Length: 241
Image (cartoon, rainbow, N blue to C red; front, top):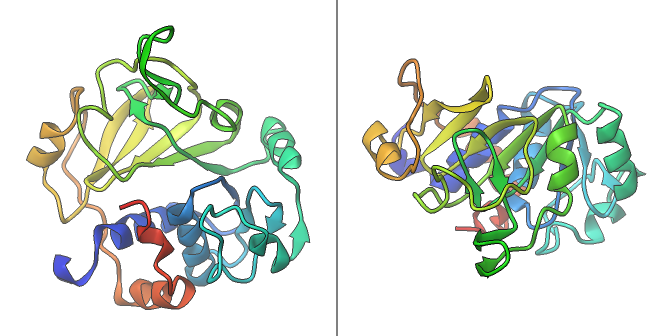
């Protein structure tokens, strides 16, 4: 399949969906349209028994076609199989029962530290960010944390984060250029998207790239793209780009 037949948002969504396994319990938070669509894609492809949890508390909503802009609207509850409130998600994670949590951040370093608090000095920051919120609890306690970021540059992937908001069970980071995987406490280059190159990833990463071999992410299939059009007709997966 040629790269021109899909967009990078499609690439990232399908890559994330393929990380999810049937029967896993998976949570996404606010402003999380891309992983929300990826979860629905996985349910429609290879993981029909995946359990979808979200901030409104709607377990396994039957449709995301009218999902609110925040990806945390009441519509996710209205079409749900059951009610599972947010406080129970934290409890579930701390008991070791949450398989995957989708979370965000602004800065990341080689050691998987996540900064979502400040840019610059903590006491006199250049930019004050939203803070850890749920990620400070879920990244250390969920079995696997997956982070997605629609920007990949040296301001995002830095040698040392300005502030450590959280660290823990960070598993993978998906960007428009590649996928990083945490191995032995360090981020390794897991795969490069077919739309990018090793040189481009190196030029836009502020720490040394670790990898055993150069691998490429599987591009979206025609079936995946067809299902995406059905489950995400308003193209929520592209909102962050």
